Each structure stands twice: as structure tokens, then as C-alpha cells.
Length: 122
Image (tube, rainbow, N blue to C red; front, side, top):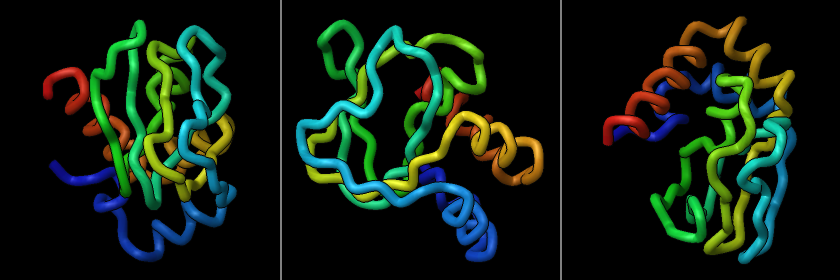
């Protein structure tokens, strides 16, 4: 399965990176908690996260993957908690930025759709 970032040209990656903010997160940090408002998403540049629902790991994601986008696009509360298994290097996207990219870049929208489909039908 292709990572989220593999969907884009270098120019598109630069645009996404430029609209986001580079953030480093320590191992053990939880940037996203279940049942909280959807106000941010992260594209993982380096590191690994555990996706947990009700304390059970349901997936691990790494470099090139996006987390937190589903609740923003679905206008819902978070359905899982994200925990950094290693130090993370990420691009932090606000909900407004994610929605802007979804509207302005057809390739970004298509990548979000593919990620959503792959997570529903692994």
C-alpha cells in the first residue's frame, strides 16, 4: 500500500509542507485523543505511532502516513488515540489547512479518499 505522501509530486509536497508546521514530538506523546474535537492532523515524516481504540492497538503507522484526518473530514469527534512509539518528525496541519488543501488540490482529496478506503477495507 502506498503511503499518503507517495501520491504527490515534489511541488505538491512542498505546498503541503509549506502550509503546515514542522513539529517534533517525543516518544510516548499522544497528539490525538479519542472523543476529542477534530482540530488537527499530522503527516508523519519520521517515526512510528500506535493507533489505539479502547486501549487496544488497531494499527501502526509510520513515515509518509497521515493521522487525524478522518475526524476532520467527517466532522466528528476522534475515534482513536494516537501514541508515539518513537520520537516523531511531523507536519502539523490545522483543520482549516486540511480542508483548504482538500478543496484546492484534487490530488490531496484523492489521497484522503484512498487512505479512508484502505483503513475501512484493509
